[in-house]
Image (cartoon, rainbow, N blue to C red; front, top):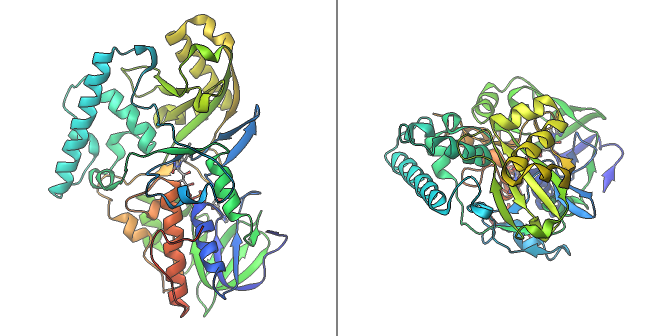
Length: 426
Ligand SMILES: Cc1cc2nc3c(=O)[nH]c(=O)nc-3n(C[C@H](O)[C@H](O)[C@H](O)COP(=O)(O)OP(=O)(O)OC[C@H]3O[C@@H](n4cnc5c(N)ncnc54)[C@H](O)[C@@H]3O)c2cc1C
């Protein structure tokens, strides 16, 4: 339910209508409190966003229901009239053995597992620092390990905390939503009172109620749930009076990496196995990953992470297709260029309301996820993918954190917070 203007006074204002904000508002809407969601964009969903192109639902942000056996959003797909696809992801294989023989793929798999083992051991010993410290010196697979970091963290392992990386929880079960993960999140928020085009620019916390300045006028609230991406918090897109340096410092320690997607159509798709994978190059982190025929569609979903994503974004949207066409022509022959065409690309770094893809903790800063979510005066509660200590960087992490912040707000306002994590009724 889109509001033309937000009410001038509510019990709880939720800032941001991404997965965290929607989860929080759904929980609060089940209470007697008055609630409004204030969203800067003209749409809800945030980094969960599905486009319809070429007759297919294409996710520009989240696409995989990671840890699907524990992911509360996975339980909500079918009740919302949408469809789960349980085909396992192809990430660990290389179609046709291009660039890497089967033996090399196995060697790389073992090198990556050994690296993660060293990270886990270091974290268990309480060590901190850049995860790249656990690379084996001069190992031929280090650039490729960094290519994986580009996908997982949106940044190289040199920029990633050992303890934070180790804390991530992954059950290894990954499903998709045929109609789009973004569409699911959008549906879950469809009945909430959301004011779009309503960026918040300032929170005055000097009085007994919080006073928010928005693009559509002032809103007073007894409590606020604050779900901005960390790069926006750190940049002071919302100004606090008096300031909150601790919150801003914690956000700066959890910057957003960049991951970018390019969806392409492909003719003669039946030449490729359904849901298979090609990695562009094995000897550098500056390469793309190419998911061939996702859902069996005549399409390719390209993925770029970290430095290469930043470089291509800086050159403009067309640069993604030019780069992908070069890599695919190298792997599949020069005539392949004629068989592909761009359908949609993401530009999350350039987007003023995200400025990146998902958060990683800088070396030494693993504890800052807890610092970021520390309630302020028991009336300002921060949530989002970046406040999740185990499911950070994901839509379900954001969702669970939105629920947590809502329970804290309910308790702060003297109401029963209800059952704990994973409880959202859907
Ligand atoms: C390319 C890519 C691929 C991904 N793949 C996956 C995946 O496969 N699986 C997975 O689980 N996750 C994935 N993710 C991550 C997932 O999409 C995010 O972690 C999650 O959607 C973040 O939700 P959030 O609520 O924390 O933040 P957001 O979705 O960013 O929501 C924050 C909201 O706040 C709004 N906002 C910002 N500033 C203001 C302001 N001043 N006033 C009002 N509103 C404001 C924004 O417009 C936005 O709607 C991916 C992300 C990207 C970019």
